[in-house]
Length: 320
Image (cartoon, rainbow, N blue to C red; front, side, top):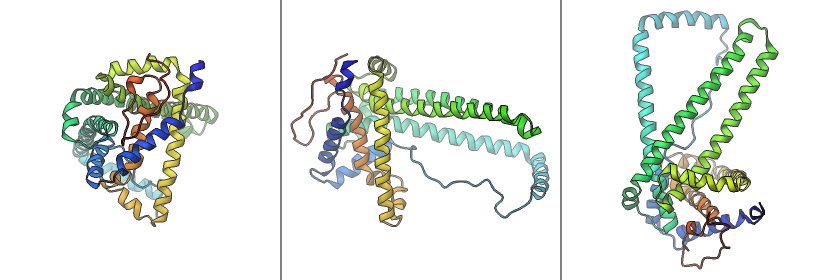
């Protein structure tokens, strides 16, 4: 436990910042930015937010009786075209699933391409795409399986929430039980969100670098990281909190940029690939942070010096 006191968080961030500056600005090379930005775009494909909110009110003030009348018309339409509606719904669902799977496959391979370029200070596309085929494919399979598990848990929680709230909305009785039940479901959902966030952070920041460093597939790399995590769980839990704080700082900086440009920046950031290129400094910083933190535990995972500068880092805590 005493070794955990020596674990640093600011020093890896400072080294990641120095690596980002050396890669992108010493010297500035637009061709390198565009090529590196492409691998960063692949690595984050399909993960961007967007879209406006939705409203659940009757926009033009229609009454519930009117809504009930329209529901009768909808029922008639359903009775006549149910088969077509179901088939169209299944087709749309299948298309969404296929697109999601394709994006996950590209993203899994792109993670290794982007990581390799950041570690080696280069901007290759074809060579890392071919070299990390095995690692990318195993990461893809794991990501799909974990995504299905999360989807099942989310649907389970939604079903439990509906079952808890249904008696109250149907008869107006049992409000305390409904509140307790829905509150429990909400608490479980928050726990699931935190758990999933940590899993994805550990996967991207630690497991993927271990896969690259030791030429492992995803399950042996998770096992390798799990041994390290069990020896110092507090250090990695604090890393997640530290990462959240960094997310807030970066988010505030982006918001300030959007406000300063009268929302012009938000329009550019919403364009696929262009937005990634504009955010490349932050993405490179994030990509280097996990391996720099991980290097404290094993010198074999240390990143090579970047930009011609000498490497200065303390001895590793353990070779595990």
